[in-house]
Image (cartoon, rainbow, N blue to C red):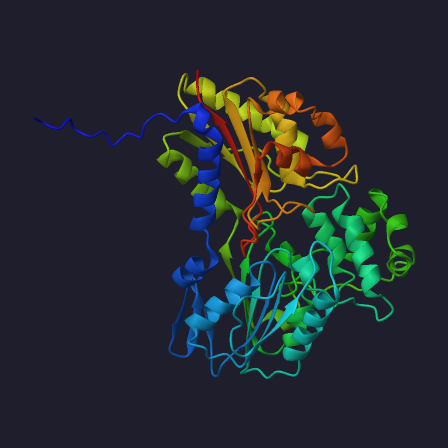
Length: 449
């Protein structure tokens, strides 16, 4: 008996499997941007050189390495593999100790979202490591998101760790976008805004970074310790004053804004950057493109959203829904997926547990109630805000299920407690730390009628 020919067209995705499929798309996207894979594909050792993409750096002898951020452990271990262990000395500052420590590295556990003693100890150790170098020395900086808190040293000797913690708390809980937050961070730090690179002069310098900021703002990754800074102290004063933050800063830092005594950061014309090169290893665009490919493999007609991704979470949700409507109308009856990235802003309005991704999904859940639609939003670093989850997923049944359990979405939103809302429903995403950070991924699905 003849076997019927097999179709290469995927079966139509079913709405009842929607949350599983959404999680699958997210996990496949995260696998596609795994740090070790990316480094081995984009970095290589050649005789007398290390090459990042098309960017070469001479190595006359083993380099010194400074890695900081949420991907620091993976980046440092993989670079050691690529260089065959030929590293003079290294510093790693990450959110936790690794299970296995690479040879010739010292490890520090920094704090996030606020710096801790390890953040400052690691940053000071890095400053010492890159001091008093020669023109034939080489330093490789491995930079990733989260470094703004994980890697820190106050610029003024009078500023304490407690001051830096409070300063960052005010910034993180404000409504400011990340680029404005990092402008403020740069000007009170001894390592940010290019100051770490300035300390490493005149050595050859290569920065390999994983971007957790908009693609056109590479100097904002970890507040740019190794890249020249185009922001100014005048911008600092303007941002802090117009947003009403100055009065909230701890007194020692507030005085610098009130009396306008902030020091300027090194600029692109500074001669200390002449021996410095940089290479972007991964960005949010890589995650978004990987998610699009994963959704298409599952049978969804998929588009990447062309709108603004970095704005108030409610504004972005409404814009995404309009784009999803248009995509659905252009493909009637077909399962479609809209992919977006970036980082929405989400002011903290209560004492609860959650983050911008879970708040986004909670707000969106009411918009898709009783519809064959689904939304997922999650952070690529494995953490969302002050919660242990990285995000959440909701479908057209979410609000009804919540109401049956006596959960009021508006109350949870107002209390910034989206984590407990979704944890009760079993709809959080829990990946654990991913040792990566390329911002967030948002997925919208319409399964057709």
